[in-house]
Length: 146
Image (tube, rainbow, N blue to C red):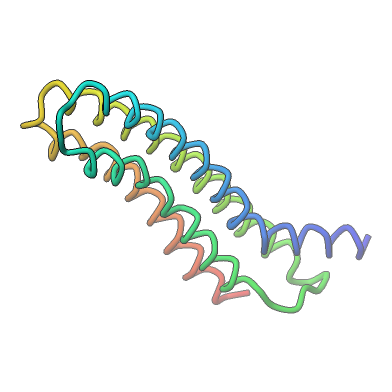
């Protein structure tokens, strides 16, 4: 039983970085496809599309910080807490990065045809980012109690 607890503890420590990175890969890919498609439809302003396509990469950074925050000796006593905090945060980061990529793709698609709405079109992606930040901050705060 102790070995299972140890595996769960280590999974909780590494999970936020791993699933945050997977979400960022998917989110950046979704937005990147839209950005590449937009390049053939516009005559300039390419950098803003590429920057927006990279927006979902922040969840990997949050996952790395949570991983370092949770990194400690794993014992049968603290393993459940490490697993719960780490994996719930990991799932939040994964899903937010994926959905943020979709929001960014939509913003790119609308801004290529109507450049004047670029700023406001980014708002949904920023809102999704906010939820990732909530998960990140709460993981840091609650991990202090382990």
